[in-house]
Length: 116
Image 1: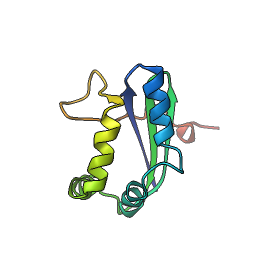
Image 2 (image 1 turned 180 degrees about the vertical axis):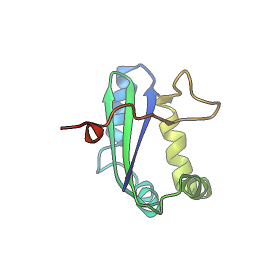
Image 3 (image 1 turned 90 degrees about the horizontal axis):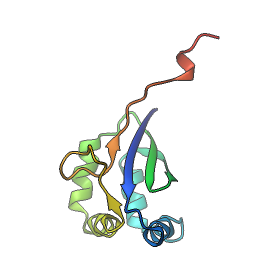
Image 4 (image 1 turned 90 degrees about the vertical axis):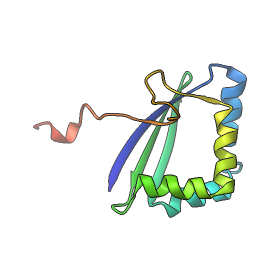
């Protein structure tokens, strides 16, 4: 299994941040969004926040294909509605490419690679 780590910023507004967190509670997130995540081969996903910075960890199956996930999401009206809603809370990182939301992070340390 492979891990992916991505980052994104929220608008720096405590009310918007609180609302974003409410939308991500297990009883509020739309079932179609959860299904799209699982159907893509994402085995585990967690989002962490500090201030207005988000970090997402995804553990994916060997068959995971980010391009196929993006295409499936683009074809889903419900996922697109979710993304539009989430965009009201999010802002791109300063170094993100035009139109890019979540930016992949580069691993710079792995304890497993260190000698005992």
